[in-house]
Image (cartoon, rainbow, N blue to C red; front, side, top):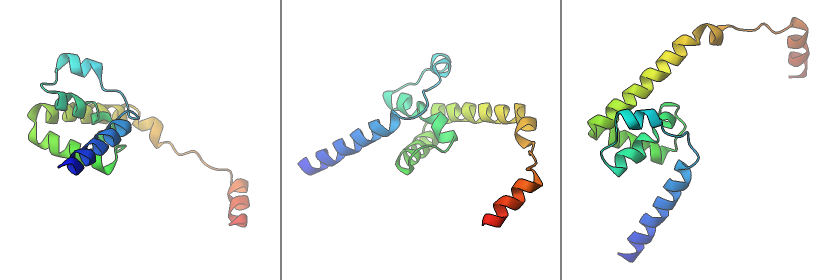
Length: 113
């Protein structure tokens, strides 16, 4: 039993350290749609990074499991995904432009490869 607690504590410390390096949660989203539990608050704080695929596999699994069982957090995830789609759409023209590389530079690089 004591070994299980130690193991659980280690996971908690590792999780907190990993979570502290991610994007901050949307305070506006928290105000408009307050999380119901501490776990919901923790998961919702990870949603931006989840959408960006910046989470560890452990945290990614936790978010997956939670949003599939929690309607409110699933809706929060949908809001984040919609925000990303809107941003991509707004910047689509700028992101799809391909700059041409001077032929001289291409030949010089290829000669060294």
